[in-house]
Image: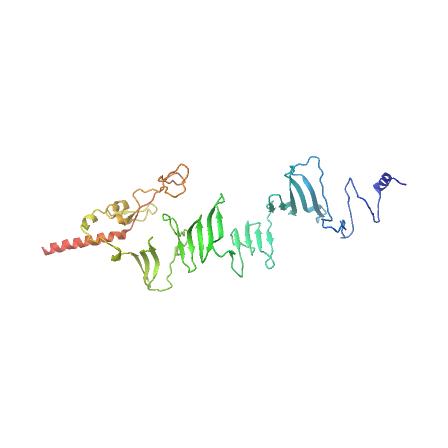
Length: 418
């Protein structure tokens, strides 16, 4: 009887042209190559087990005596010749050890393809993330839906993301739909539902847009600063010390409108703007009084006033005013007639807003920087104090001017009658 070791020796250099049936395991200390002249499967793993366990199994094992982070566990390499006959690795699937520590083992899978002659990582599946195009190659990422070939499109060359389209028009994110709404925010809950939330670096909700009943609300923190109601009205509720609406147009052409208010209801009447005080009373308004005329009005109804008396000695007060000629620092070539606000303040204080040499200070309720107290001066980025400029409403000088003319007319009449 031929012993097993003799058979092993015989098969060392054997050339078997038929079928080799092996009942036991095959162990090889060197590589094995299976070659066919056609496209049939070179290797088939078949399991006839009928239970629910996984099978067949291809087990790639690296049995290292000193495993370390970064070790390759196994790799499947896809090679072919290029048109010059060079054996080229066109793609590969490789697994590596991320953390070899006992009890904290982690691994990763890298899927790579060759791009312009260089093998690049296209998909990297790690224990803490899944990344696409980690090597930063100019390739696009695209996801198709049943009816849209570009349901999600990442433009690798332009660093843009499009949803429903391949172009973004220069935006970093564009959501496009040629048939319906370009973007929709939908919530199952009928009211008080956040549609958009903006967070700061501390994960604190800084601004929310939400739907509440029939009103779309915009909040900073938990305080509402704007809402749009179902009747089409927009309401702004901000800190009284801040501008509620800012409109800037530094790049508009000279003929363009920064803000246009259109009266489509009545060309000969109607309010463009109404100013309402905290108790709901009208403080003033801008009104269309004709097809080509506008009236700027401050409330002056006698029913709003008390302690009414006749103005006296207007001429003496008028003589205290000091009209000046000047130009603004930013417009050195334009000379104007007018007043210095602080010089008018002592004569007609109601015509002046602000205080002489006023500065911005920190106020109660503001988030104070370290070492700053309420009442301290605010500083700009260069460490300078920030001025609050005084203003003048020259229309409030009109009553004084009218009374002065009346007094002068009375004197002239008295002199002519003497």
